[in-house]
Image 1 (tube, rainbow, N blue to C red):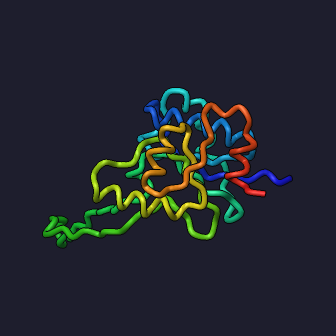
Image 2 (image 1 turned 90 degrees about the vertical axis):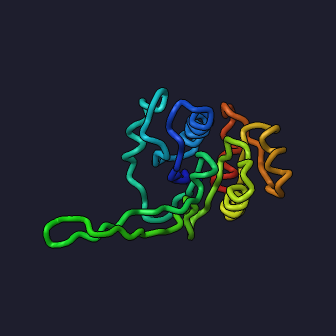
Length: 176
């Protein structure tokens, strides 16, 4: 049996979502190598001991993309200022480069570990649902959270944390 390689976009702080992301990460480590990509300002709290996972070599292909962060981080519009500078170095005007950024990765298996309820703002909710429905697997840590997402026609799979038996998580990450 091969050990699936996981690239893990996670909120790596001590917030409620960060704590769930941490527990899922511990489960992921039991089934294969993990590369962590922090979706926060850095590692904090219990995440500190896992800093080497930020440097785990990532294979070019043959990995599973796993995401556990706030819904607003699954997909967002990024605006970057592009200042126009004259020959003296003075900024004469500023234009903006705008692009949608998605944590979903085409060409690999994508798993969404959902640790927070759906957004309440209608416009943000639609963006979140559009992003979530692209993933091949949608996992929640509690029945109550799963019910909230089911009301929105999402099909969550329940894998409680902490994970005592990684078989269910492995089946989601690397289905038979």
